[in-house]
Amino acid sequence: MSDVERATVIRAIEAMEKHTATVPGYRRAHPRGVLFHATFTPAPDVATLTTAEHLAGPPVTALVRLSAAPGNPHAPERKPDGRGTTLGLGIRFDLPAGGHATWAAASIPAFPARTPEEFIKVTKLQNPATGKPSPWILAHAATHRHIVPGLRAIAGMPVMASFATTRYHGLHAYFLVAPDGSRRAFRYSWLPDAGEVTLTDEERPPHYLVDEILRRGTASWSLTFTLAEPGDPTDDVTARWPDSRETVRAGTLRLDAAVEDQAGLDATVFDPTGVVPGIELSDDPILHFRSQVYGESFTRRTHEDRG
Image (cartoon, rainbow, N blue to C red; front, side, top):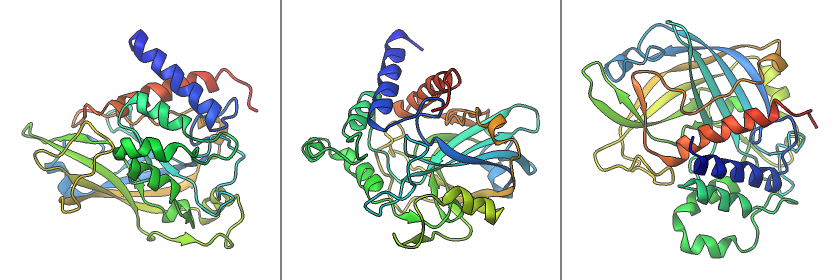
């Protein structure tokens, strides 16, 4: 990481700490979560698209973290105005040959920034007292229309019934590398096999998601790849691809049991750039920036006493 990149990461972390009410000793985003042991079973046909060993072979074990987004881990999952919060699914695949691959997905279908500098600016648009956008955000969005879908996704997040009934989006573009060496851009999502289920404001208390998934004990999602066509942008996380793009079911993720030592494994970093041969990163600057921010967040929280 260059000095300029590190300075940008520091400014981003400091903006998150100030404007999203983070708490020392916790992740700077998605601080409240729960870990599960899981199994991922690849779909047979995916081996024609990629040589990645966790996608092109037998089932593999995995570690999954389901989480809620407020910077404060003690904040309610249901906001005072009845809106829901962004949820996350981080996964660490155990590779047959040893080592791991990691991804991180979120329940929003769009992201509100295409560059690190814009992420910092958008983060500062929030009122730290309420978590709501500051009034002048409309003026900013009027001249930066590409951020509007992401802002709407966050503002319109419904109250989800369960982590298990939530769809999670990988957001960024990656490349599949096939056995013949050909490359195909794709985005991924986790579709809940139980279906997407939301609640009204009155149906759940402010805190419920972790307890609910622990009582449920298991859940499953289908990994789905959306395949790009020539000309689809891969360097802009805010750019949508047409809904007509081909989709491929790539496998099934199933939660097996909650991790007993939650504190012991909570230091795990679910880096969205943690890919292996058979998958390549795109040149999306936010994708690489997230990895750097996750690293700085890890360093800070592991050297702090929990608040």
